[in-house]
Length: 157
Image 1 (cartoon, rainbow, N blue to C red):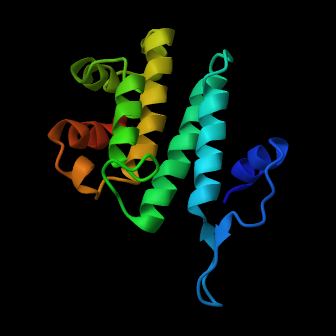
Image 2 (cartoon, rainbow, N blue to C red; image 1 turned 90 degrees about the horizontal axis):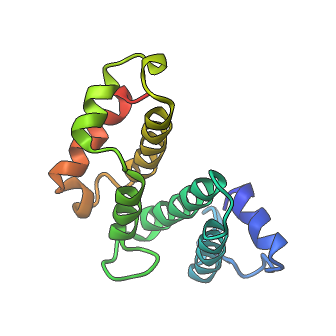
């Protein structure tokens, strides 16, 4: 569990004991299902507060935890913590610039892109960084539109 997640849990008064699953003696403990659920609920609650651009940071943190848990435990459709479609829906909410426009703007120098579009493209690029961690799950691997976005990511400002 990263420092940010631990800090959020501590600020919320959640004891950290019991939030880790322990495996064999030489394995690094992983975040427990209960700990992950608590952290996701906290991040989602913080993201819903009217706080401007920080809202995106809280959602990104929640989705990073989401992808971490999917990486550790595997994808499970319908599971509120392990369903890759949750991250896909989040990405589509972030991707306010149509793909064809994003591809066209990716060829421009950043200073030639209107500020609102540049900010939107950077948000998309950050969200794609989160989604990239799930790129081998069937939900994302088999989605041609998402694969096109992932290929565009390195070219976005």
